Length: 113
Length: 113
Image (cartoon, rainbow over all chains, first blue to last red):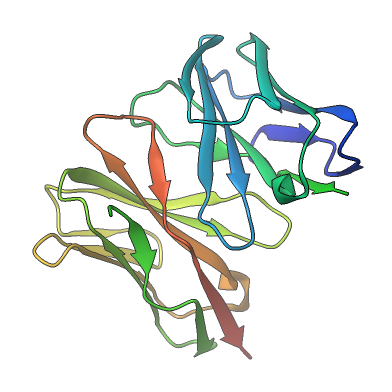
């Protein structure tokens, strides 16, 4: 276990649904990240939060909406997704946004039908 | 364009042999490199890192080599074990973005018994 948990582990949703992914870290870290991992693309950074403030929005469509209510929790709110959004969504945390090791959760496997 | 890439998508080795996984990068401004291992159903796990002021770094059964002249990175695993079967990613970090990791597409390592 890395100290980063994600729920749900699997999610199937229709294009008109609204759902949320949850990430929790138990490491006392100050930075949290959302990544997208597709079958044919390298891991892509989506969002970065440092001390609950967003410091990176990597040209992600507005149908993905992150939320960081405190330094231990990170959400990714999903609405009106497209089939091409099907992927593994990984959460990670690190001590801070300097070059500190990033610890990844197990991911949420999302399928958009 | 700038990229981090891997030479081989799949590497098959005999148990007990040494494994070498290669990675090329194109941005000479990158000065920090990390290797991650991702097992099935899990998120990436940090293995070892190296800074550009070094050309070699050793860990437990793993060695990372950095050749800045040809922008090449390799991960050597000694006495490969079945538990080493996974996808291995290299990632680069550029001086101007301390937390932003650019990942390669990954190499799958298969260990034959």
